[in-house]
Length: 80
Image (tube, rainbow, N blue to C red; front, side, top):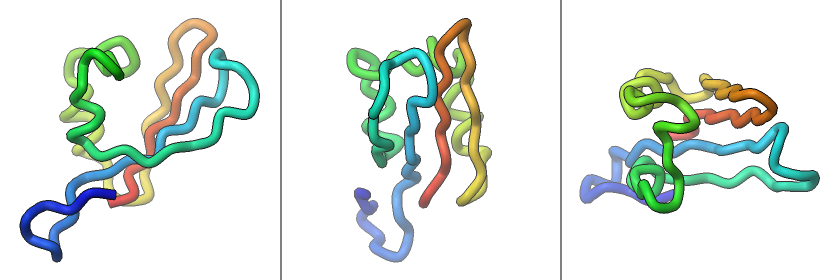
């Protein structure tokens, strides 16, 4: 997890779990909000929609958002 300049205020981070549609045995990963902003890697608008950042920032630590698109299921849980 990455921290902002103020060490007491961690950057938002999310556990990403690929639950369906991406093959078996994909381990959850922790990613910062900054990493999820990398459009060429994540394309978050496809998972969550155009307002994805507001949705994820609206989560409290421990809360999750499930993205289900046809046969794909990805869960984002805020961890910081």
